[in-house]
Length: 217
Image (cartoon, rainbow, N blue to C red; front, top):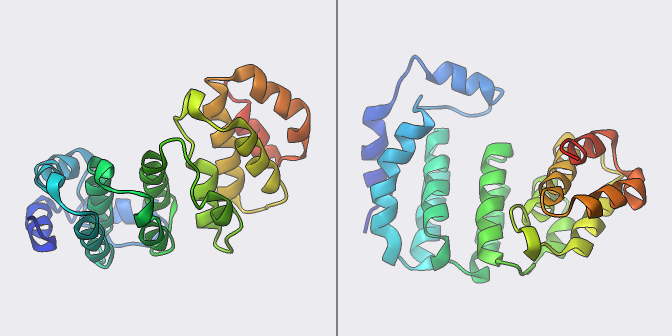
């Protein structure tokens, strides 16, 4: 079974010190970087993720937690790559550990990656999302708003609109953006429903949310 040391060994030779400062600056100097471009990182992690296809949920979570503890951001990306490739081995039983990762080293890149993984695990269900929407950490609330991305006809429209209205008062940029993104994504499947929502209850949404939601209507 691959270990954290195997992942370090796979990524370290790809490090590019000349590229790292720009990557760090893009993330507002919050994280250190090895300087590895996304395609190269994914290519290096892909065979490792494949070897983990028989790992237990506990083993996958433990590996992700170890990678999350490392300072360079590429290791958190590697954890997301591995979890995304093996999400079928996970269940709602792992949601508490995944939500704990949401609240560590939080920024849009890691949170949105975890939102996609959590959405895959839920597969049309909504376990824990009402609680997430009421959480005091806005990154957790962002998970609740984004967990239905790409669900199309499986989207719980009432829940989507209810969550959007519940966050209408929020001034946090990443919440306003998430509200708009979730509505815009659903509008690809149900444009008339989103248009009607924006003309009715959705008039209370922040201007940024409304612009994002209506971008392709």
